[in-house]
Amino acid sequence: MNVYTTDKIRNVAVLGHGSCGKTTLVEAMAYLAKITNRMGTVADGNTISDYDKEEVKRKFSIATSLVPIEWEGVKINVLDTPG
Image (cartoon, rainbow, N blue to C red; front, side, top):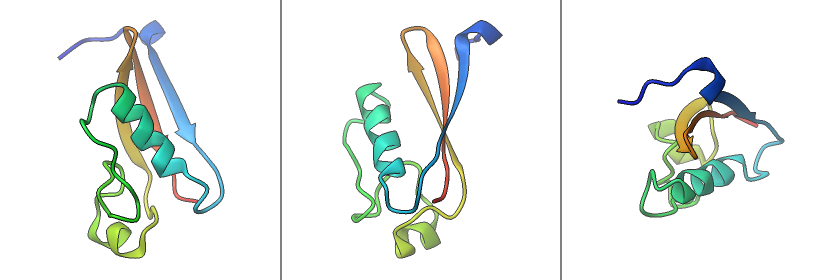
C-alpha cells in the first residue's frame, strides 16, 4: 500500500442534478486509471460506486461513494454524490 503525503492527496466531490452522469463520469475515471478493466453502466447495475442492492434496483445513487484513484503519483479521492 502506498503512503501519500498531504501534498499528494486531492479530494474531489462530483456534484450535479440527478441523472446528469456523475456515476458514469466516476466510472470512466476509474477505467482510465486502470482500476477496472471494463466500464460499468448504471442501466446494467454494474458500476463500482453504486453497489448497494437498492441503488442497483432504483438505478441512482442513494449514498455518497468513495472511489480512490491514483493518477501520476497523486491519490485522488473521488466522492460520487447522490443527485
